[in-house]
Length: 284
Image 1 (cartoon, helix red, strand yellow):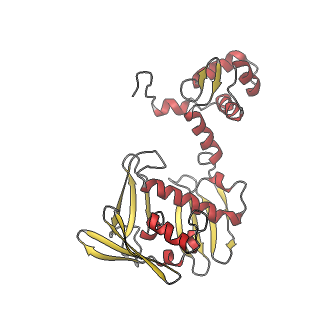
Image 2 (cartoon, one colour):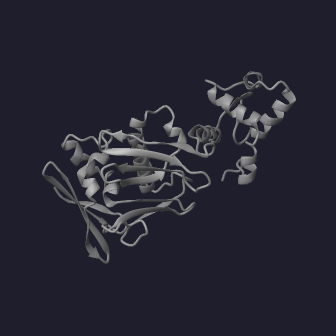
Image 3 (tube, helix red, strand yellow):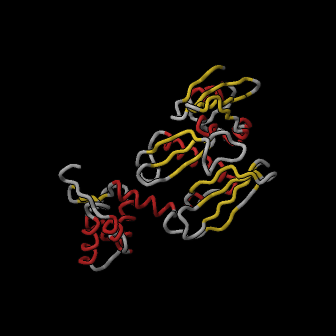
């Protein structure tokens, strides 16, 4: 840590935001196109007592507000506060259930339950009520979107979060994540041979998916789909038959080695994944 930085206790940091004037200051700086002077910021917040305004502003300076060249702006922490407010994660304790059939393939049910560790979204196939995925999804993602857009929005959210964890970064606390291929897990379905899991070493946040979901980001898999007219950066992966079949096969127990086949248009791509999530393309 640099000499001009200091650690602030969590209770001290969060207590700084427990005031509507301070939240108003952060909002005003976020809405501004450029840094604001004291008088400009005072006018936008609208608090008549300049002494009280100055008191609250000084409480924020250094962590949630930056003072530079006589003007005020938001640092990274301030922008994160705005992101948390807009996402609704900490301000929505419940959300109406919303569901709709999407092109006859999947339906979406988003439901927020108060006083739980996460707020979950669940996606299912109406013909068999098969659960496709369960993952934390902020309430703000519902705003401004039609229900028809939600499955795609949720899929992109989930795939991006899973990809970040696979890259060794926790999307919750930015800590280091460790991934592994497992054959014994409470999240393993009866018909699954193996599953991929990621755990954050700092906060314990957890993500689990089938082997196919993990392989979606493999360059060979991306190129294989592109050669068959499918852009995995644009098209929905939930429409892929091979992904729903979860074709993971254990070929070695010790050390653990799993083989996986991706099939498109009669062509096959064979891949292997070991216990340390080292993957390789076998043949095409």
